[in-house]
Image (cartoon, rainbow, N blue to C red; front, side):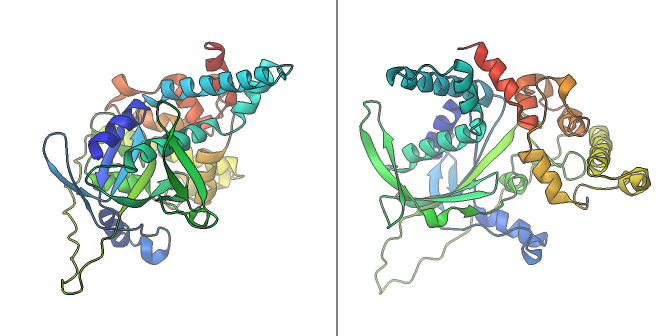
Length: 369
């Protein structure tokens, strides 16, 4: 299944798909004290799936971490262009084309287009890969999205009040149905950086950038979701003892691929970013001494800062319009040279991910529509 998932995800721009066992993550956050403090919760740890990698390696996992490099941007822009064209065609067929093209663009761009692209695309990919997987019978799977939303998908097991989703083949016929439990739509924050760390594929820079660094892509990647699989439970004969789940051994942690001087530079940029954020929230000169040695984890208003970085919309159609508060957060990624020359995001992708300025998307679409 992992081979199929990787191929389907990569075709849609999500070229990072790493299998994990959720117990590795649960053990880590417990060791770090987050469970006791209530800052993070454990995620489900269902029985493992036994699979084989493309190189013949035996795999035992119960979840995957999905992410992307710069490859997602052209896929997203193509999807967005198609969405606009479809909307224009619908209006033309309904005889309501009197609305201007700019009005249609604004309507599409005001609808959280990137988040919609991620959730719609990955939902379809997993529907296709998980509904009829030979040799692996799944009952359901959980999406833990990077924005803190949790959604459970049941396969062919509808309950009252569930939302029905259909997946179609190339002929337009419904291949199967699955059901999204409305009761399972909830908020559940998963630390994507820690999930990445336990895959053994990423080094977590907890001193400088606070980002995970990939030996190939460097900091030029992002995590979108953890998806946890639940196999169908087979009824055991009463005379047979229940099977004991064996948790696979966690892989070795990824060694640090970053030079010490780059980590030190990132620490300086981080300190400046925190100082600017503190000033933006009303701090003055009297706070300079306090913020000089401030770290990300103990910064005041940490949740407000996270909201600002991940959910706010600011000006940023080009570098000259980026606010002084946001600029150092963007520059943090550039402190690490690994992968920078080959995998750095283009300006439009980089600026949009941080500022969510719709003018960037409007400029991209004008080249296509």
